[in-house]
Image (cartoon, rainbow, N blue to C red; front, side, top):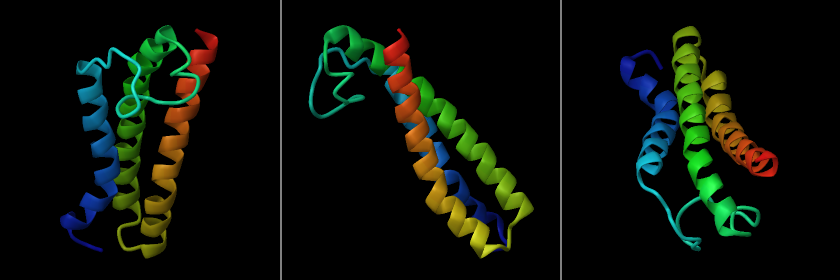
Length: 112
């Protein structure tokens, strides 16, 4: 793991979150549905919660994607040859990002 091409896996998840978050900021999901949007029991409980959740979630996704991308670059530059760091990051990063997006959106719904 010593070439610039090795940086790509560190960036993939964060960049995907950024792109999807930006797309969902532009695309408004107007009605509660079962196939697209932020779908949890609390977000689907009424139209107001649905609107709030689907407005907030892309922001959380962009924030998680940005942090994931920055962390990936830092870890790559600092630990380029460490397979252990690479594997740990690839396993833990998506879990932490998804948990953050879920918990922050649920907290937002509860408090607003």
